[in-house]
Length: 635
Image 1 (cartoon, one colour):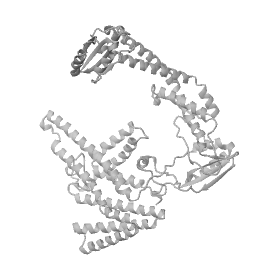
Image 2: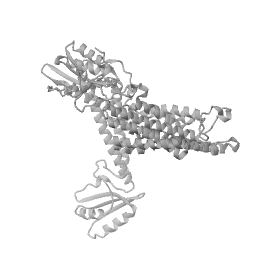
Image 3: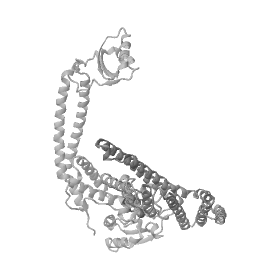
Image 4: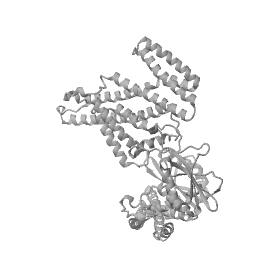
């Protein structure tokens, strides 16, 4: 069962002199071997290192500067010369003398001001265009005695506004209207003392008011668009100069900024981690989890850095504390671990089902897709998706799993002789090489699918047995065994009674054993007994492998039958039929791929995992940093 367990972990305690703290933290950070945890030892709480505020301030500045410059030049276009991590004092000095940082912020602020200015000009140009042809001079509409209101309103309500204004006989006003398609622009000039009357009229309508106090509305509507256009061009030219200056700084300094930022991040982590430590006046204490296979390596690091002035203890976890989960799989299978984490991290004290998921998901997907053409196409799509998505994101990891599953689809497509719905075996005289035919071996495929289901359900219960035994829950553990007996004998009884697959004697005997097994399960665990009655039907869920696979093959064969293009029908008909042929196969392929992914995941996560998997583990997160742009030599 070792293969199905996460890496064994050990909690340790390290005590050393205060004078060795920074160097030990540095060594642990470089090696990334210890998952640091808060110690509950009866000592004083430690604090961050004294230089943390200064380097945190510098980090904020360099991150901000990097963010500004990354918008000007792509980071992958910069050639990085190898940069060794600077000593702390040198790093702070190097960062503080970087006089281009204030210049970057100054230029960035100027660029932001110009963007706001250009946006304001654009809004003003839109207003000026709305008033084109009205003869209004915006420089003349500023008065203490008169008030001016402009707005747009739905065209059907414009007449109503005029009628309501006309009802107020004492109201002196001038109104200008202009059609703007479905809306009408209305400009009203009236005495300031009548503002309440106009407001009361407009309150009943949904209007979009125009801000006439805009300082950029400074002349007649005839010349205003032209003047604003010149002003916009001037602002754009200024922005272009600022952008050019930022580009120069980016091409020269961005690489250096990125490297210094990475060093600062490293130092901030090192300075912050001591909040998890305990201390006395002369010593400090750090606790954490380490993989057992690296236990000796960790002690060797501590011994070397502290010059043999240390205490290294293997300790028991705190009450209720669970060891972190560490999976040790090849890098090319890491996406399966990501998907498991996306669902729930396996606990370190239970069986890790990821290996079963790794094998079963491609098999289920491959059987449902089961077409060489669709398999090759899905492999290409998945490969392209990995090239355009974030390597730390869900889509990337889904695509990596999809690639592996696509290979299984090609394999099953070869076994069933499916090539975009065509069968090549009969045409090539190789029908004898077809392992199974979707149209003639339906029963065999159904039995294969249900066999997969029966195997996975039983395997899940076996895993449940070992998990419960590991937790010293013997009654629940043995209820898993009686459940397995009930499922096996129940399946035989159902197959014999409904389908005549077994003799009457065998059917009756297995039915009796099934009843006894369910009674025993109930005595051991009432909940498990209730579940067992449902579990007998769970293997039938795997019949969906046949259902979706058959649906895809039938649709593909119908497309081939009715829409395969032929030159005999003429060039135009050939081209049109070819387009329809490709589109229909594309849609069928997308539907098949989608169902293949969803149903394969469902059979694993719902039908299989529910039999034993608790989840809720804590991922092993060693104290360390993944460098990209700098290096630090090991001591």
